[in-house]
Image (cartoon, rainbow, N blue to C red; front, side, top):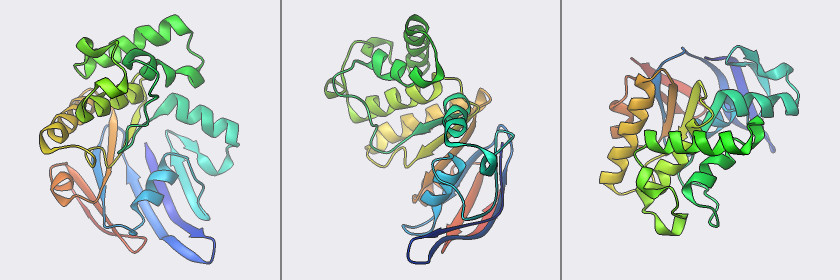
Length: 220
């Protein structure tokens, strides 16, 4: 599903965020990329999610050579193959849960009626059928994150990238979110969790520990 070969990422001013990273994540894995602030894990997320390009080295995602794709092709790749979950939800305040999820399918070219049907299906997967018509201000933090997960999986992507998915939640809500990620993995989705929390990382089958732009340890 993911292969990085000798990847470096240099930011303006000569700052090296990644230094010759080799990484392979197979289809169907559940893995954590874990490290402190400034370790390079967010840069890894951006490269794996095709939100940024490597300065050098090879990046392959879902069978595609990212370095050879145009920006339009990268957008299409994200729309079809990759779902994102972020720490701060990024929900549209004026839309209810169904339309927030359906909005995520807009760029995949799915007709409106089907978008809403798939949104309801995704919200049922995260156990929010009783909140379909609620707007973000009417939802708890945990419920907002579950809407965000539903939005990420409504397009049925093969890869789900979760960036600090429990960072803004209380312990109980965080446990529910992690349970949902395990369920999605059990259903065949490749799930990669980016976190600074070692407890979350050690609860997953694989921990990729990053420090100073390098993979320090890869535990399975």
